[in-house]
Length: 470
Ligand code: ARG
Image (cartoon, rainbow, N blue to C red; front, top):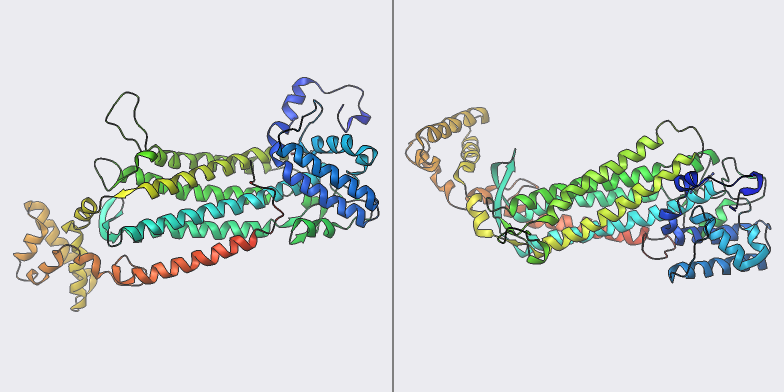
Protein backbone atom coordinates (compact mmCIF):
# COMPACT_ATOMS: atom_id res chain seq x y z
CA UNK A 1 0.00 0.00 0.00
CA UNK A 2 1.42 3.37 -0.98
CA UNK A 3 1.16 6.50 1.13
CA UNK A 4 -1.42 7.91 -1.31
CA UNK A 5 -3.66 4.83 -1.64
CA UNK A 6 -6.70 6.34 0.17
CA UNK A 7 -8.86 7.05 -2.89
CA UNK A 8 -7.95 3.87 -4.84
CA UNK A 9 -9.66 0.50 -4.78
CA UNK A 10 -7.11 -1.37 -6.90
CA UNK A 11 -3.34 -1.49 -6.55
CA UNK A 12 -0.99 -0.40 -9.26
CA UNK A 13 -0.26 -2.83 -12.08
CA UNK A 14 3.32 -4.10 -12.11
CA UNK A 15 3.88 -2.54 -15.52
CA UNK A 16 2.97 0.91 -14.24
CA UNK A 17 4.96 0.38 -11.08
CA UNK A 18 8.06 -0.52 -13.06
CA UNK A 19 7.57 2.52 -15.24
CA UNK A 20 6.92 5.01 -12.51
CA UNK A 21 8.98 3.98 -9.51
CA UNK A 22 12.07 6.16 -9.14
CA UNK A 23 13.58 4.79 -5.95
CA UNK A 24 15.95 2.66 -8.00
CA UNK A 25 17.78 5.81 -9.08
CA UNK A 26 16.68 8.61 -6.75
CA UNK A 27 17.69 6.84 -3.52
CA UNK A 28 21.05 8.61 -3.85
CA UNK A 29 19.20 11.79 -2.88
CA UNK A 30 18.60 10.55 0.66
CA UNK A 31 21.00 12.98 2.45
CA UNK A 32 19.38 15.98 0.77
CA UNK A 33 15.83 14.76 1.27
CA UNK A 34 16.47 14.17 4.97
CA UNK A 35 18.08 17.59 5.24
CA UNK A 36 15.02 19.12 3.54
CA UNK A 37 12.66 17.22 5.84
CA UNK A 38 14.50 18.32 8.96
CA UNK A 39 14.27 21.93 7.81
CA UNK A 40 10.58 21.40 7.05
CA UNK A 41 10.09 20.14 10.62
CA UNK A 42 11.57 23.43 11.88
CA UNK A 43 9.01 25.28 9.77
CA UNK A 44 6.18 23.12 11.15
CA UNK A 45 7.27 23.78 14.73
CA UNK A 46 7.64 27.50 13.99
CA UNK A 47 4.10 27.57 12.57
CA UNK A 48 2.74 25.69 15.58
CA UNK A 49 1.61 22.83 13.33
CA UNK A 50 3.61 20.35 15.40
CA UNK A 51 4.77 20.78 18.99
CA UNK A 52 8.42 21.17 19.90
CA UNK A 53 8.43 17.61 21.28
CA UNK A 54 6.84 16.25 18.16
CA UNK A 55 9.40 18.16 16.12
CA UNK A 56 12.23 16.61 18.11
CA UNK A 57 10.77 13.14 17.65
CA UNK A 58 10.47 13.65 13.87
CA UNK A 59 13.95 15.05 13.67
CA UNK A 60 15.41 12.14 15.68
CA UNK A 61 13.64 9.67 13.43
CA UNK A 62 15.03 11.44 10.37
CA UNK A 63 18.52 11.21 11.85
CA UNK A 64 18.01 7.51 12.44
CA UNK A 65 16.91 7.02 8.83
CA UNK A 66 20.00 8.91 7.71
CA UNK A 67 22.17 6.55 9.75
CA UNK A 68 20.37 3.55 8.27
CA UNK A 69 21.17 4.76 4.77
CA UNK A 70 24.74 5.74 5.59
CA UNK A 71 25.40 2.35 7.17
CA UNK A 72 23.57 0.57 4.36
CA UNK A 73 21.01 -0.79 6.79
CA UNK A 74 18.01 0.86 5.17
CA UNK A 75 15.57 -1.67 3.80
CA UNK A 76 13.30 -0.57 0.99
CA UNK A 77 9.67 -1.59 1.41
CA UNK A 78 7.88 -2.89 -1.67
CA UNK A 79 5.57 0.14 -1.49
CA UNK A 80 8.39 2.70 -1.57
CA UNK A 81 7.79 4.48 -4.84
CA UNK A 82 10.58 6.99 -4.52
CA UNK A 83 13.12 8.21 -1.98
CA UNK A 84 10.66 10.72 -0.50
CA UNK A 85 8.04 8.09 0.27
CA UNK A 86 10.63 5.63 1.53
CA UNK A 87 11.92 8.13 4.07
CA UNK A 88 8.47 9.22 5.21
CA UNK A 89 7.35 5.61 5.55
CA UNK A 90 10.37 4.75 7.67
CA UNK A 91 10.03 7.89 9.83
CA UNK A 92 6.47 6.86 10.58
CA UNK A 93 7.60 3.37 11.56
CA UNK A 94 10.26 4.78 13.86
CA UNK A 95 8.43 7.77 15.35
CA UNK A 96 4.93 6.29 15.54
CA UNK A 97 1.81 8.42 15.13
CA UNK A 98 3.66 11.71 14.89
CA UNK A 99 5.17 10.47 11.63
CA UNK A 100 1.81 11.17 10.04
CA UNK A 101 2.45 14.91 10.60
CA UNK A 102 5.74 15.10 8.66
CA UNK A 103 4.11 15.78 5.32
CA UNK A 104 1.88 18.58 6.68
CA UNK A 105 1.87 21.67 4.42
CA UNK A 106 4.15 19.91 1.94
CA UNK A 107 3.79 17.99 -1.30
CA UNK A 108 6.31 15.76 -2.99
CA UNK A 109 6.30 18.45 -5.68
CA UNK A 110 7.93 21.13 -3.55
CA UNK A 111 9.84 18.45 -1.67
CA UNK A 112 11.51 16.96 -4.74
CA UNK A 113 12.27 20.40 -6.15
CA UNK A 114 14.01 21.30 -2.87
CA UNK A 115 15.88 18.03 -2.55
CA UNK A 116 17.10 18.12 -6.14
CA UNK A 117 18.19 21.75 -5.88
CA UNK A 118 20.30 20.91 -2.85
CA UNK A 119 21.86 18.00 -4.70
CA UNK A 120 22.53 20.10 -7.78
CA UNK A 121 24.02 22.98 -5.80
CA UNK A 122 26.46 20.57 -4.21
CA UNK A 123 27.20 18.81 -7.48
CA UNK A 124 28.09 21.97 -9.41
CA UNK A 125 30.44 23.02 -6.63
CA UNK A 126 32.16 19.63 -6.75
CA UNK A 127 32.55 19.96 -10.51
CA UNK A 128 33.96 23.47 -10.07
CA UNK A 129 36.50 22.17 -7.55
CA UNK A 130 37.45 19.39 -9.99
CA UNK A 131 38.04 22.00 -12.71
CA UNK A 132 40.34 23.95 -10.41
CA UNK A 133 42.38 20.83 -9.73
CA UNK A 134 42.84 20.29 -13.44
CA UNK A 135 43.81 23.95 -13.86
CA UNK A 136 46.50 23.48 -11.21
CA UNK A 137 47.85 20.44 -13.03
CA UNK A 138 47.95 22.27 -16.38
CA UNK A 139 49.81 25.18 -14.82
CA UNK A 140 52.23 22.83 -13.07
CA UNK A 141 52.97 20.93 -16.29
CA UNK A 142 53.65 24.24 -18.04
CA UNK A 143 55.97 25.33 -15.24
CA UNK A 144 57.73 21.96 -15.15
CA UNK A 145 58.44 22.32 -18.88
CA UNK A 146 59.33 26.01 -18.76
CA UNK A 147 60.62 27.26 -22.10
CA UNK A 148 59.31 24.23 -24.04
CA UNK A 149 57.77 25.20 -27.36
CA UNK A 150 55.67 23.64 -30.06
CA UNK A 151 53.98 24.85 -33.22
CA UNK A 152 50.69 26.63 -32.69
CA UNK A 153 48.13 25.45 -35.22
CA UNK A 154 45.24 26.90 -37.11
CA UNK A 155 43.30 24.50 -39.35
CA UNK A 156 45.69 21.94 -37.83
CA UNK A 157 48.41 23.44 -40.05
CA UNK A 158 51.54 24.85 -38.43
CA UNK A 159 50.97 28.56 -37.95
CA UNK A 160 53.28 30.19 -35.39
CA UNK A 161 55.55 28.83 -32.65
CA UNK A 162 54.18 29.04 -29.12
CA UNK A 163 55.25 28.10 -25.62
CA UNK A 164 53.85 24.86 -24.20
CA UNK A 165 52.76 26.80 -21.11
CA UNK A 166 50.86 29.25 -23.32
CA UNK A 167 49.06 26.34 -24.94
CA UNK A 168 48.17 24.60 -21.67
CA UNK A 169 47.13 27.89 -20.10
CA UNK A 170 44.68 28.41 -22.96
CA UNK A 171 42.85 25.31 -21.73
CA UNK A 172 43.16 26.56 -18.16
CA UNK A 173 41.43 29.83 -19.06
CA UNK A 174 38.50 27.90 -20.57
CA UNK A 175 38.24 25.82 -17.39
CA UNK A 176 38.29 28.97 -15.25
CA UNK A 177 35.34 30.27 -17.26
CA UNK A 178 33.61 26.95 -16.55
CA UNK A 179 34.18 27.45 -12.83
CA UNK A 180 32.77 30.97 -13.01
CA UNK A 181 29.72 29.67 -14.88
CA UNK A 182 29.15 26.85 -12.38
CA UNK A 183 29.37 29.32 -9.50
CA UNK A 184 26.87 31.60 -11.23
CA UNK A 185 24.51 28.67 -11.73
CA UNK A 186 24.85 27.66 -8.10
CA UNK A 187 24.01 31.18 -7.04
CA UNK A 188 20.92 31.35 -9.27
CA UNK A 189 19.59 27.99 -8.09
CA UNK A 190 19.85 28.99 -4.43
CA UNK A 191 16.10 29.68 -4.18
CA UNK A 192 14.04 27.43 -1.92
CA UNK A 193 10.80 26.02 -3.40
CA UNK A 194 9.78 24.47 -0.06
CA UNK A 195 6.39 25.77 1.03
CA UNK A 196 4.93 25.89 -2.47
CA UNK A 197 3.01 22.69 -1.71
CA UNK A 198 1.58 20.73 -4.62
CA UNK A 199 1.31 23.88 -6.77
CA UNK A 200 -0.63 26.61 -5.03
CA UNK A 201 0.75 26.88 -1.51
CA UNK A 202 -1.28 26.01 1.57
CA UNK A 203 -3.86 27.42 3.93
CA UNK A 204 -1.66 26.34 6.83
CA UNK A 205 0.44 29.15 8.26
CA UNK A 206 3.87 27.95 7.21
CA UNK A 207 6.71 30.44 6.74
CA UNK A 208 8.97 29.21 3.91
CA UNK A 209 11.88 31.34 5.11
CA UNK A 210 12.38 29.15 8.19
CA UNK A 211 13.30 26.06 6.19
CA UNK A 212 15.10 28.11 3.54
CA UNK A 213 17.45 29.63 6.11
CA UNK A 214 18.12 26.25 7.72
CA UNK A 215 19.05 24.87 4.29
CA UNK A 216 21.33 27.76 3.39
CA UNK A 217 19.22 28.96 0.45
CA UNK A 218 19.74 32.62 -0.39
CA UNK A 219 16.11 33.27 -1.25
CA UNK A 220 12.63 31.75 -1.30
CA UNK A 221 10.26 31.28 -4.22
CA UNK A 222 7.91 34.11 -5.16
CA UNK A 223 5.40 32.05 -7.13
CA UNK A 224 4.30 28.58 -6.07
CA UNK A 225 3.55 27.38 -9.62
CA UNK A 226 6.99 28.41 -10.78
CA UNK A 227 8.57 26.86 -7.67
CA UNK A 228 7.31 23.34 -8.39
CA UNK A 229 7.69 23.40 -12.16
CA UNK A 230 11.00 25.22 -12.62
CA UNK A 231 13.85 22.98 -13.71
CA UNK A 232 16.04 25.76 -15.11
CA UNK A 233 18.59 24.87 -12.47
CA UNK A 234 18.93 21.36 -13.90
CA UNK A 235 19.21 22.70 -17.44
CA UNK A 236 21.85 25.20 -16.40
CA UNK A 237 23.89 22.61 -14.54
CA UNK A 238 23.66 20.25 -17.51
CA UNK A 239 24.69 23.00 -19.92
CA UNK A 240 27.64 24.04 -17.81
CA UNK A 241 28.77 20.43 -17.53
CA UNK A 242 28.21 19.85 -21.26
CA UNK A 243 30.30 22.88 -22.19
CA UNK A 244 32.98 21.80 -19.74
CA UNK A 245 32.80 18.38 -21.40
CA UNK A 246 33.34 20.01 -24.77
CA UNK A 247 36.45 21.71 -23.39
CA UNK A 248 37.68 18.42 -21.97
CA UNK A 249 37.03 16.68 -25.28
CA UNK A 250 39.20 19.21 -27.09
CA UNK A 251 41.97 18.55 -24.60
CA UNK A 252 41.46 14.83 -25.10
CA UNK A 253 41.67 15.11 -28.87
CA UNK A 254 44.90 17.02 -28.55
CA UNK A 255 46.44 14.42 -26.26
CA UNK A 256 45.47 11.76 -28.78
CA UNK A 257 47.32 13.71 -31.49
CA UNK A 258 50.33 14.58 -29.35
CA UNK A 259 50.86 10.95 -28.34
CA UNK A 260 50.75 9.54 -31.88
CA UNK A 261 54.01 8.30 -33.38
CA UNK A 262 53.47 10.93 -36.07
CA UNK A 263 53.40 13.89 -33.67
CA UNK A 264 55.35 12.33 -30.79
CA UNK A 265 55.12 15.54 -28.76
CA UNK A 266 54.19 13.72 -25.58
CA UNK A 267 54.13 10.35 -23.88
CA UNK A 268 51.60 9.49 -21.19
CA UNK A 269 52.69 7.52 -18.16
CA UNK A 270 52.16 3.76 -18.38
CA UNK A 271 49.61 4.07 -15.59
CA UNK A 272 47.49 6.27 -17.85
CA UNK A 273 47.68 4.17 -21.00
CA UNK A 274 46.33 0.83 -22.05
CA UNK A 275 47.69 -2.03 -24.10
CA UNK A 276 46.20 -4.03 -26.93
CA UNK A 277 44.88 -7.54 -26.47
CA UNK A 278 46.49 -8.55 -29.75
CA UNK A 279 49.26 -6.12 -30.69
CA UNK A 280 52.08 -6.27 -28.15
CA UNK A 281 53.65 -2.95 -29.17
CA UNK A 282 50.54 -0.84 -28.59
CA UNK A 283 50.35 1.87 -25.93
CA UNK A 284 46.99 3.56 -26.34
CA UNK A 285 45.79 6.91 -25.00
CA UNK A 286 42.34 5.61 -24.08
CA UNK A 287 42.05 8.19 -21.31
CA UNK A 288 42.16 10.96 -23.88
CA UNK A 289 39.79 9.18 -26.23
CA UNK A 290 37.25 8.66 -23.45
CA UNK A 291 37.56 12.30 -22.42
CA UNK A 292 36.76 13.12 -26.04
CA UNK A 293 33.90 10.64 -26.18
CA UNK A 294 32.11 11.47 -22.95
CA UNK A 295 31.25 14.96 -24.16
CA UNK A 296 28.71 13.46 -26.57
CA UNK A 297 26.91 11.88 -23.68
CA UNK A 298 26.96 15.12 -21.69
CA UNK A 299 25.48 17.05 -24.60
CA UNK A 300 22.91 14.26 -24.97
CA UNK A 301 21.85 14.59 -21.34
CA UNK A 302 21.33 18.33 -21.77
CA UNK A 303 19.37 17.82 -24.98
CA UNK A 304 17.23 15.11 -23.41
CA UNK A 305 16.29 17.34 -20.50
CA UNK A 306 15.43 20.33 -22.69
CA UNK A 307 13.24 18.19 -24.94
CA UNK A 308 11.50 16.70 -21.90
CA UNK A 309 10.78 20.19 -20.52
CA UNK A 310 9.62 21.65 -23.81
CA UNK A 311 5.87 22.14 -23.98
CA UNK A 312 5.11 20.99 -20.42
CA UNK A 313 2.05 22.77 -19.06
CA UNK A 314 2.26 24.33 -15.61
CA UNK A 315 2.85 23.15 -13.04
CA UNK A 316 4.24 19.80 -11.85
CA UNK A 317 3.99 16.94 -14.34
CA UNK A 318 5.37 13.48 -13.81
CA UNK A 319 7.62 14.07 -16.80
CA UNK A 320 9.75 16.07 -14.40
CA UNK A 321 10.85 12.88 -12.69
CA UNK A 322 13.00 12.35 -15.79
CA UNK A 323 15.18 15.27 -14.74
CA UNK A 324 17.32 13.21 -12.39
CA UNK A 325 19.12 10.53 -14.34
CA UNK A 326 20.63 12.94 -16.88
CA UNK A 327 22.14 15.04 -14.11
CA UNK A 328 23.33 12.06 -12.09
CA UNK A 329 24.96 10.71 -15.20
CA UNK A 330 26.53 13.99 -16.31
CA UNK A 331 27.84 14.63 -12.82
CA UNK A 332 29.36 11.16 -12.46
CA UNK A 333 30.87 11.14 -15.93
CA UNK A 334 32.39 14.60 -15.85
CA UNK A 335 33.97 13.90 -12.46
CA UNK A 336 35.51 10.71 -13.85
CA UNK A 337 36.95 12.64 -16.79
CA UNK A 338 38.24 15.53 -14.67
CA UNK A 339 40.05 13.19 -12.32
CA UNK A 340 41.50 10.96 -15.03
CA UNK A 341 42.60 13.85 -17.24
CA UNK A 342 44.31 15.53 -14.30
CA UNK A 343 46.21 12.31 -13.68
CA UNK A 344 47.02 11.87 -17.35
CA UNK A 345 48.53 15.38 -17.67
CA UNK A 346 50.40 14.83 -14.43
CA UNK A 347 51.90 11.63 -15.86
CA UNK A 348 52.74 13.19 -19.23
CA UNK A 349 56.33 13.60 -20.40
CA UNK A 350 56.62 16.30 -23.00
CA UNK A 351 59.15 15.53 -25.74
CA UNK A 352 60.57 19.03 -25.77
CA UNK A 353 63.23 18.27 -28.41
CA UNK A 354 60.77 16.82 -30.89
CA UNK A 355 58.26 19.62 -30.36
CA UNK A 356 60.97 22.30 -30.57
CA UNK A 357 62.11 20.93 -33.93
CA UNK A 358 58.57 21.36 -35.19
CA UNK A 359 58.31 24.78 -33.53
CA UNK A 360 61.39 25.87 -35.46
CA UNK A 361 59.80 24.93 -38.79
CA UNK A 362 61.16 27.67 -41.02
CA UNK A 363 57.88 28.18 -42.87
CA UNK A 364 56.49 29.86 -39.75
CA UNK A 365 59.10 32.61 -40.04
CA UNK A 366 57.17 34.08 -42.98
CA UNK A 367 55.06 36.31 -40.75
CA UNK A 368 58.16 37.56 -38.92
CA UNK A 369 59.68 38.76 -42.19
CA UNK A 370 56.40 40.46 -43.08
CA UNK A 371 56.24 42.14 -39.66
CA UNK A 372 59.86 43.31 -40.01
CA UNK A 373 58.94 44.90 -43.31
CA UNK A 374 55.99 46.60 -41.59
CA UNK A 375 58.40 47.97 -38.96
CA UNK A 376 60.39 49.45 -41.84
CA UNK A 377 57.27 51.24 -43.08
CA UNK A 378 55.90 48.81 -45.70
CA UNK A 379 52.08 48.52 -45.59
CA UNK A 380 51.12 45.07 -44.25
CA UNK A 381 49.25 43.92 -47.38
CA UNK A 382 52.26 44.77 -49.52
CA UNK A 383 54.62 42.99 -47.10
CA UNK A 384 52.32 39.94 -47.06
CA UNK A 385 52.34 39.79 -50.86
CA UNK A 386 56.10 40.09 -51.10
CA UNK A 387 56.79 37.40 -48.51
CA UNK A 388 54.09 35.24 -50.10
CA UNK A 389 56.05 35.42 -53.37
CA UNK A 390 59.18 34.24 -51.56
CA UNK A 391 57.27 31.33 -50.02
CA UNK A 392 55.87 30.47 -53.46
CA UNK A 393 59.37 30.52 -54.91
CA UNK A 394 60.62 28.19 -52.15
CA UNK A 395 57.72 25.78 -52.65
CA UNK A 396 58.10 25.72 -56.47
CA UNK A 397 61.87 25.28 -56.37
CA UNK A 398 61.86 22.83 -53.50
CA UNK A 399 64.44 24.96 -51.64
CA UNK A 400 64.21 25.96 -47.98
CA UNK A 401 62.65 29.38 -47.44
CA UNK A 402 65.77 30.41 -45.48
CA UNK A 403 67.90 29.79 -48.57
CA UNK A 404 65.56 31.73 -50.81
CA UNK A 405 65.63 34.65 -48.35
CA UNK A 406 69.45 34.51 -48.01
CA UNK A 407 69.87 34.53 -51.78
CA UNK A 408 67.63 37.55 -52.32
CA UNK A 409 69.43 40.89 -51.83
CA UNK A 410 66.14 42.57 -50.85
CA UNK A 411 65.59 40.09 -48.02
CA UNK A 412 68.89 38.60 -46.97
CA UNK A 413 69.06 40.96 -43.96
CA UNK A 414 66.27 38.84 -42.44
CA UNK A 415 68.16 35.54 -42.33
CA UNK A 416 68.73 35.83 -38.55
CA UNK A 417 65.00 35.39 -38.08
CA UNK A 418 65.45 31.73 -39.02
CA UNK A 419 67.62 30.99 -35.99
CA UNK A 420 65.88 28.55 -33.62
CA UNK A 421 63.66 30.22 -31.06
CA UNK A 422 63.92 33.71 -32.56
CA UNK A 423 60.39 33.81 -33.98
CA UNK A 424 58.87 32.71 -30.67
CA UNK A 425 60.87 35.25 -28.66
CA UNK A 426 59.68 38.10 -30.90
CA UNK A 427 56.03 37.62 -29.92
CA UNK A 428 55.48 40.33 -27.33
CA UNK A 429 51.99 41.81 -27.69
CA UNK A 430 49.82 41.46 -24.54
CA UNK A 431 48.53 37.91 -24.08
CA UNK A 432 50.75 36.58 -26.87
CA UNK A 433 52.68 33.35 -26.89
CA UNK A 434 56.22 34.66 -26.39
CA UNK A 435 58.27 34.33 -23.21
CA UNK A 436 58.19 38.10 -22.54
CA UNK A 437 54.51 38.21 -21.49
CA UNK A 438 54.43 34.68 -20.08
CA UNK A 439 55.11 35.78 -16.50
CA UNK A 440 52.40 38.40 -16.53
CA UNK A 441 49.89 36.00 -18.04
CA UNK A 442 50.71 33.35 -15.47
CA UNK A 443 50.35 35.87 -12.68
CA UNK A 444 46.96 36.88 -14.02
CA UNK A 445 45.86 33.28 -14.41
CA UNK A 446 46.94 32.37 -10.90
CA UNK A 447 45.16 35.33 -9.36
CA UNK A 448 41.90 34.49 -11.17
CA UNK A 449 42.32 30.87 -10.08
CA UNK A 450 42.89 31.96 -6.46
CA UNK A 451 39.81 34.16 -6.35
CA UNK A 452 37.67 31.43 -7.94
CA UNK A 453 39.03 29.00 -5.36
CA UNK A 454 37.91 31.33 -2.60
CA UNK A 455 34.51 31.71 -4.23
CA UNK A 456 34.09 27.91 -4.45
CA UNK A 457 34.90 27.58 -0.74
CA UNK A 458 32.58 30.43 0.18
CA UNK A 459 29.77 29.04 -1.97
CA UNK A 460 29.96 25.76 -0.07
CA UNK A 461 27.33 26.99 2.37
CA UNK A 462 24.93 24.09 1.90
CA UNK A 463 24.65 21.85 4.91
CA UNK A 464 26.63 18.95 3.52
CA UNK A 465 26.11 15.28 4.04
CA UNK A 466 29.03 14.06 1.98
CA UNK A 467 29.56 13.54 -1.71
CA UNK A 468 26.63 14.32 -4.00
CA UNK A 469 26.55 10.68 -5.01
CA UNK A 470 28.22 8.27 -2.65
N1 ARG B 1 9.49 10.97 -7.75
C1 ARG B 1 8.83 12.17 -8.13
C2 ARG B 1 9.77 13.06 -8.97
O1 ARG B 1 10.92 12.76 -9.00
C3 ARG B 1 8.41 12.90 -6.93
C4 ARG B 1 7.24 13.80 -7.13
C5 ARG B 1 6.01 13.02 -7.37
N2 ARG B 1 4.88 13.89 -7.37
C6 ARG B 1 3.70 13.49 -7.80
N3 ARG B 1 2.75 14.37 -7.79
N4 ARG B 1 3.52 12.28 -8.26
O2 ARG B 1 9.37 14.00 -9.58
